[in-house]
Amino acid sequence: MTPSEQQIAELMLHWEQQWQAGEELSSELLCERHPELQEAVGREIRALKAMAWLSDVDSSPDGGSAEPDFQLSQVAALPETSLST
Image (cartoon, rainbow, N blue to C red; front, top):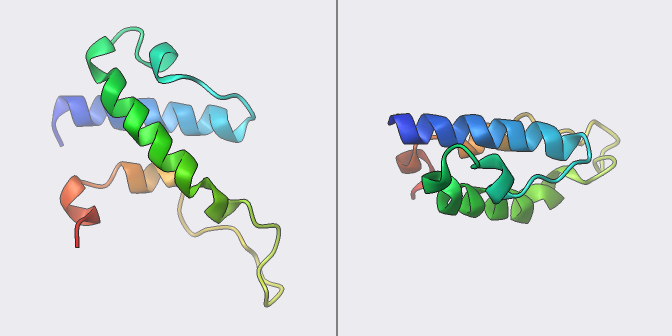
């Protein structure tokens, strides 16, 4: 993982923690110290928001837990090749 990828992963982890606490941070705010990462972070935020419905379910059809076995930031932190088909 390159230093930029590591910084993006750390920023996205912070974003996800705030999102789960009910606060939505913009890419501009997250990237104040690293404006060169703003575009990439913005893409990651949009992708995570698009997938957020997956964890918005109260319960599963079989009555078990609907909690995912992963956090969205874990997916975002995967190397790009891991997400390719």
